[in-house]
Length: 142
View (cartoon, rainbow, N blue to C red):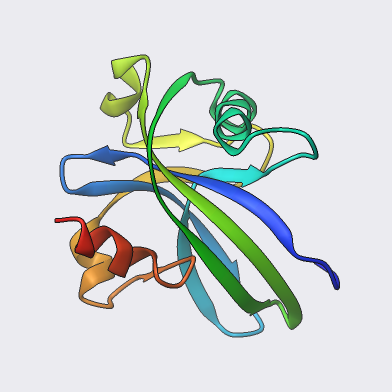
């Protein structure tokens, strides 16, 4: 975090009515939240290429990046520190269909685990999905 805006890219990967996300925790807020997988866009790198790279790094997986769903600006506080991100959101699919058979996937460069969470849990407010505005973006496309 810091005083700069971070450009990130996130993948909307679905298995039926579930979304692939990782679970995070902000102990300062006492909040458990979920976010699609992805990461930072490096200087000179296109957002779709960054997403493909992130999935190779995080899950050792190849993905096919599809339509860009939108761009969301996320101004937030995490663990008591301010953050500001601009997030490119893409629909994506795994190149290897066996990834859809896994209920959980260990993220290789982080202690987190990715899992499938029903979109209904985010729509009814029982679980928090970041970045803000993503669930509305996904609901609008249906």
